[in-house]
Length: 228
Image (cartoon, rainbow, N blue to C red):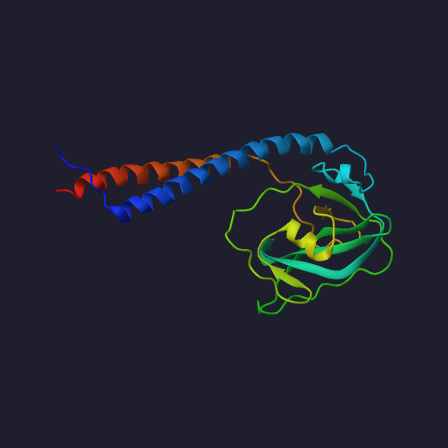
């Protein structure tokens, strides 16, 4: 009978990566379930009237919020966005409401400059304005070990939409408020007609689970083959 001896290097490799692949698969399954729930919430809020930015209303995905105040000069440029074939940024800007404090408004898309090291200039809307924005749900980010450092000063060019981190830096409420076309201060509006389908997440989950199974079979095969 063949002896099973995969060696310590292969054993450690498998011990580390199988749980990681299974965790990624489970994460995609959870994301799929979240998308199915968000689709129902999106449809339920389509006919809702704008309301005041209270903690309760800001906790409701797709609730429309009416603000009154002015834009401040602090804003983030979220990199790697595409609009009509152009690569650029989403502009996440601080809005100071006269009664309720500071909020993070996604003003939409601005094209990047030819020199990616140079940030595009975004005009600051002037005066007292009353935009209506939609509470956009946090769809989650791929986990990373360390947060990438942000540049000093403003605007800050960022690679991930880290709303909690943005809110902490700006003393704003930790929620993304997305502007529709036609609202004061909007650029090329960020997408609203987003399909909350779980098909993509099912495919990713099957991929991660398949890789974990393949790795386990490979581990067993290697352990017996190595003894020959």
